[in-house]
Image (cartoon, rainbow, N blue to C red; front, side, top):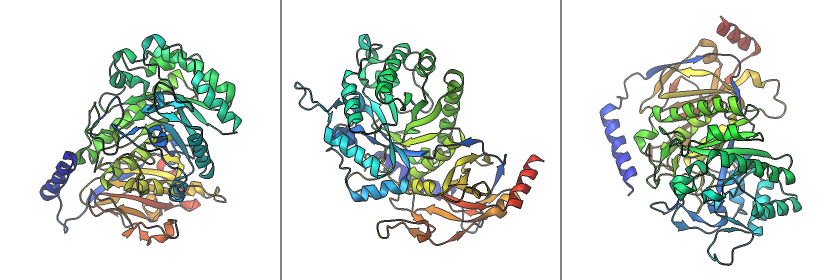
Length: 520
């Protein structure tokens, strides 16, 4: 049994025994405050997006079963992912529309279409795999983010990127009338020092020069595609790691001759036991600590200021995120306890102005939302599903006086014919990190607007299955719908360790009254 699981279970048992509340005690009161009646941020309609790692797609080295890492990769090779499974299509459509990112560490090592004669075991993306991927994208209403090969592991080559190998892929893609919507060059290039040695670490000015060449090549074939970069990895506490070696984002953004459409970054709030750098280990007490969530806000705001100063035309995207770096933490990242950070980061990212949030990963690894071998959805898949069903693109500034009760307010997801009503209907997301119920209090207009909702709970923190409004989530006729679950009326009490989404239905008069009361 993994150490983190046994220690985590013991921690939970001791915590509940020592600090848990008796059932006859009144729930802890928590006060929510709506600061503005207008939205403070807007997300892309494909805000909640996800990735399939190039290693999983093409059959490279991956994490399941691996106990450690080698140069940023798992130590076990997996067969290429089959994208023609109908069950996988159904699961993806339930989360759409979305961007699909194809990237990961082996994006910088992979060969396109032609396998080198002197490397019989080299990872090679085949024409068939690329065709199958494009079919998968088209039938599931996805848009493609593609991480192109940088691969310049010797410093003397950096700043002289040519892209001759990429050109073959671009020409084939153009010939087949396929589409790549967003291009990025290289995967977490600021971390080359950790995985490939200090002498492989690109300097910011060289990377900027290579990005300018990259943009010119891509736009010669796909003139309307967006260019995203630099995709630097950020660690809790460390940020973009070691200065001046790998803190490349500020200088990179300043040195670019051509503008970016997207400034993106990668962030994992925790690290698995496989990770060579562990600033916040994936343990149950960390996964439930609200302080763990706040680093995302700190770095998001820092990047936003950099973007505003150096690339003001660009959107800010979280280009990769997952529960625990290097494949996720076995028997924690795939459990209910790993849903809280994800629900919170979706809400926090939207409020901080992140236009898109790309989850690593859709499938594969302990952090995958779908089990690679069985195609079974994990608990955080259902968090993503509820978010996609309910949360609209407008984020409001709602605050809690208790950091362990997280709160986010959005417009209701807009559907055809509802444009006129959307501003009067909102959805409240509540995340209770406490081991006991809490009583939620708020200004009367907001409280009276709350009607029904969907409360997610589980038998225990390490459960693989979740319930919505007390009912197990099951497919019916290959589908899941909100009306399958019993109605739950908001009563102001949030269950222990729960995530819930609540409808807020304002009449026009109530909305006007709320606006006047906030202004006064």
